[in-house]
Amino acid sequence: MKNLIFKTFCIIALCGVVYAEEYTVDPTLEPDPIPRFNPANEITAPARIVPSVKPEFDENSLVLPGDIPIIPPQLIRNDSGQLILVHYVSRGQNTRNQSVQNAARTQSNQANARPQPGTPANTRPQQSSQANSRNQGQAAQPNHQPIPELPLLREFDAMSESERMAALRRAMDIVLVVNTRRGLNTRENTPNDILLMALAHGADAQVFQPNPNHNPRDRNAANVPTGNYIYSIGALAWNTPCNGKTLLRNEGRRVIARVGHGFQNQPAGFAALLAMSNIMPNYELRVGGGSFTIADLIESERQSVSRGTNLSMALVALSFYGSPNDQWKNDFDETWNIERMVTNELNRPLNQGTSEVTDWLLGLTAAVKLYESENIPIRGPMALAKRQLQVYQDFVMSIQNDRHLWHPKFFLYKGFNPDAFATMLSSGHILRWLVSSLPDDELRDPQVVRTVMSLTTTVNRVRPETMLNGLTARQLESLAVSLHALSLYYQRVFGENPPVRTPSRTVAAM
Image (cartoon, rainbow, N blue to C red; front, side):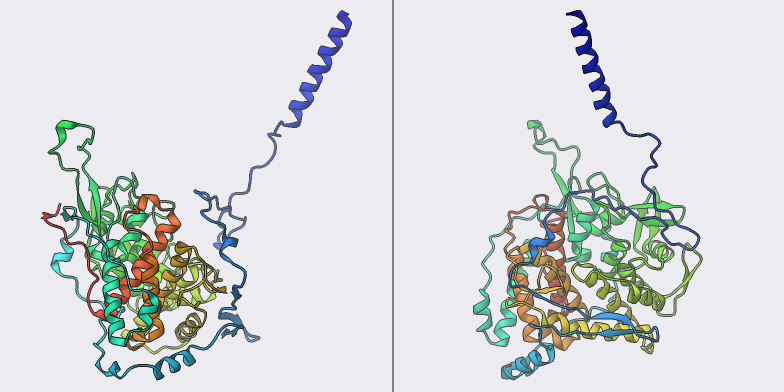
């Protein structure tokens, strides 16, 4: 009996050893290769991208039965090694020239009475001294007002041109005012959240800064203020902690804007916001106890320019804060200018199904407009970029769905998707670029006007009681970029900044 027990124990122990050995990791195995740069600045090992958050939706679910595949314009090299632009016309597409001609035939006789459009997007109005002193100005929270319903699209189509533009302006007033803040605050929202939501209102955008001494559970602290509103760009420029994160850091006199989750989505995003908000280069930045200016940040962005990387937002920023004749050295001692940046962008492969392509178009638009404003001859890569923009302007209007918006997969499909935020993401990005690039007279084209009204109506589906903290990162980007597109259209067509919630009182700047 004892022998049987001993043998059974030995068998169990042996099995346990075998079982353990099956799951033992060999310590001699090499770890995953880490991407490093060789002297030629090329990646010698594949880089792994680890997402910081789970995917918010299934990309494949955005394509529905009946969606029409689209072949977007492509830059290819011919036998001589030259870049040439090829534009395919797929089934379900039409040329914008035909749609414009058809719309022109149906325009009313009131076309001659159109008001003049506003200041073009590529002009640089002087910043007032009041705007420069906004740094950290504060205001109390206003009362919420009831929101009237927007006109139905079928009612909108039945209006005359003058009635349509008046209805569009009223609808945009409602939507832009309602979405001024949506519960944005420095305690819970990251620098990237505040950056995105500042796009629509620029220097007028505000964020709530809670009072750290206010305790809502303390009954004796009823007279302690809950906090104040401060200007969003001032908060970012003065490195106010947002959700515990600060956007800027410095290395000596070099100012660097952080990139990553909670900071910038992509390089030069903050510099592009400053450019699109017409903030002058002498605006103060406060980093690490030192005082800097936007000019210091722009110099840092110049040094960070590198071949083969995404330079879309850098082109937007450097085209505003620079000139066609500027040349500089980057961190690798390479000589760069705006034309070389455009060449880099033209040679860079793109994902036509994401916002990467519209950011790319924004960068090219900023560079071409800079050359045109300075009366510099458009030739070489600049001429190819300008031709690319013209082709894409016709192309995007030809792939709209029957609601005058775009497929969530941007330029790869034509069709309608019931996901409002997915539609806002693509349509907001595309319309923002389109409004930035079209000439003034085409902004009142009936097809463009219907697109703006349709996007306004879609944004209005996000109810006013919805706070930003209840949205995913992708949904927040969808809302912010759509509001920016509407704001740009408002400025260019109606000639003034969009309305904001006026604070009841203003506190002196910090």
